[in-house]
Length: 267
Image (tube, rainbow, N blue to C red; front, side, top):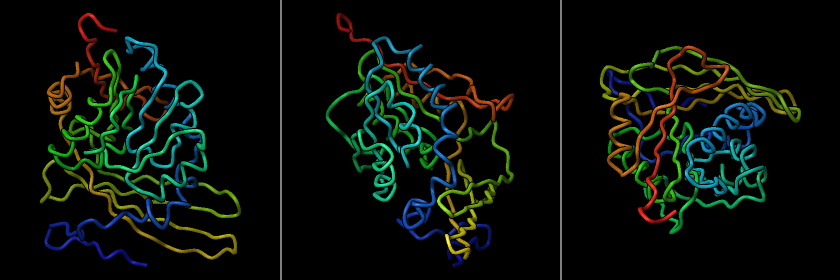
């Protein structure tokens, strides 16, 4: 099942509006790619950040680009979570895991729910904002939905200063099935402020049959200063905080916070 998106003459050609298979027909395999238990440490870090920087009791959370709902599975113990994702198949997966949470299909660049939350989270889905314009729109969505005194958090996989081409592998087994993946990150010469993540998946079904699939992810890659500037331009007070996780020791990875000022004379 070879993916037809290929590089020609140093230029990446990707058919427009083609959904990634991982978030479409392969969505049911997602829990084997990144099991929900693997999110406990980072979810605890997010909770600490929200509690430390919120100027109001953190009780509600908007998760934009929520994917399979693996962060919400841990955060929902103390926060009432509303989950937004553009992919219906991922929302269905999350709804099975988090039936008590509200789920809404929408694009983080444009969705408007008409209400605010104490905390807004855009996890690594923010990396799909592959232009400054799209990144600015996603940050504006977060600002619109953050209550005065609330906090928005953004976690790109990389900024320009810490990006390294390379490969990673992993996967897990469960329910009689197994998945293994190879991730290959690289930067075409033709791309400005973007990089490519090619993902190859080996999918073993309950009968032992194995299928190979491929996805190409085009990701945004911006300088740290650009992140802080765009966050500030929406009206947030920007802040960069080291990402505290056992898998990222001494790598220079950070998360970005947007602190929404308290309305004068309000709460």
